[in-house]
Length: 279
Ligand SMILES: C[S@@+](CC[C@H](N)C(=O)[O-])C[C@H]1O[C@@H](n2cnc3c(N)ncnc32)[C@H](O)[C@@H]1O
Image (cartoon, rainbow, N blue to C red):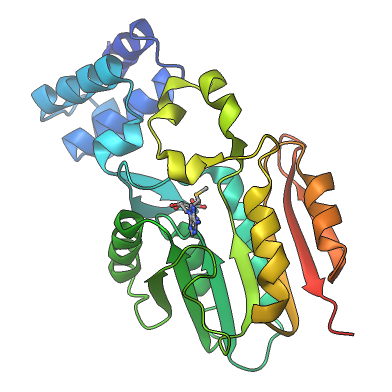
């Protein structure tokens, strides 16, 4: 039996759902070897491998926090308990944002509200690498901002992305105007906390929960003042929680047009984008 299978069994017995995928990740990372080498019987750092598996099953901490990083759109991101672990479906928001901006000829200014690890801003900046683009990423958490900065600098994006501590728009000046406001805001209603998986409960409350029962308070606040901070024909783009598209759409209808909703691979309406009605 390979060490991967052994670790998979340990994780399974410890109640870890994605035991197979996590076992492969743990062995690859802790050994520092390529998967082909491991499958041919090469192995090193066995103590470390078993120690990580033990921490994972005992603490139920997400494997990404234990390892200190996660992957998003093929890129390695530093993560820790101060930031949300990037989710695969958030790639849709990056792609939608790119589509909205790719034809812009002049300098592009983007505001990301709730930058977290920085995964959205970094991937968007890279997709628009040939453009003159400046992204301002804000977050209410100084610790999240510090992690975002580490990722921004690891990816050599410090000339394109700046960060600022701000409670939504509180530190955005009236004369700052953007082509796009993008956000994956906290959208889980607080009352649903008890139903979440153990791993998700280890992520920061501030990144997950909205105080209201529908999970739409951040959308409300962001949409309400967005016209003040958008350039003429500016766009807004959000990731959505389950069953939130209808409510967010009606909030947008007052000042926005060209509202588009995109589904994810599970057929869930996952993003919404719209253009400011500049009239
Ligand atoms: C769902 S996470 C998204 C993180 C990252 N953008 C991503 O997609 O992986 C929401 C982020 O919003 C931040 N946040 C929460 N309340 C905020 C507020 N009032 N103003 C600004 N950011 C806030 C959290 O700290 C967290 O980083």
